[in-house]
Length: 230
Image (cartoon, rainbow, N blue to C red):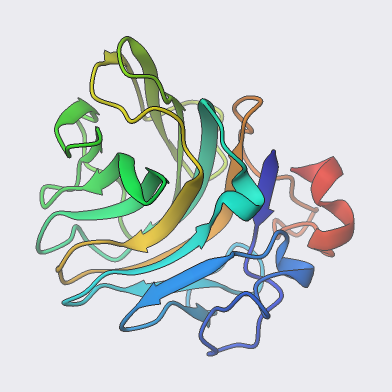
């Protein structure tokens, strides 16, 4: 399993859907929920556009379900995030589930730090420094979906840097057993606006930064090149 999506294939301003999230974007998402919806936007983008998330009173998400993920006992993942500011209330930005129940969640705290929490939302590991705002920054991580002694890791980077701002590891005791869905968006009532791009989920290791052309933009034609460049 090696899933990638770069938001290049959908109509600008449109709500993200299964029908428009594949093609040049990469692997299409399977499920969507929430209001306001996640949309294609070019205010901030690694290529020509990205996914804009405007947090509100209810959750909004786009997900790779079991149809794409299968069922895995371990996952590595990456997301580029442009955050306007820390959220007004704690909100999840990535959620892992098994059979509809939470296995783990990545929380964006009101002080700007990131927390990887378990199936019951108890904190397992967290960054000490606030996630960068007003720039593209990258989050990468690793989770073993086992009941005890789960290896968990969280790394943050400025853009495409190879040097982490922070790298946190731990052994978790409350992670759900197995994972069959990974969702991206905002999962709690909060005031926050962010843009997501360069999304990856896989079961074979850290991917690092995206491959880019001389212009600094993403290599074009995601569908044809994703296996080689991601």
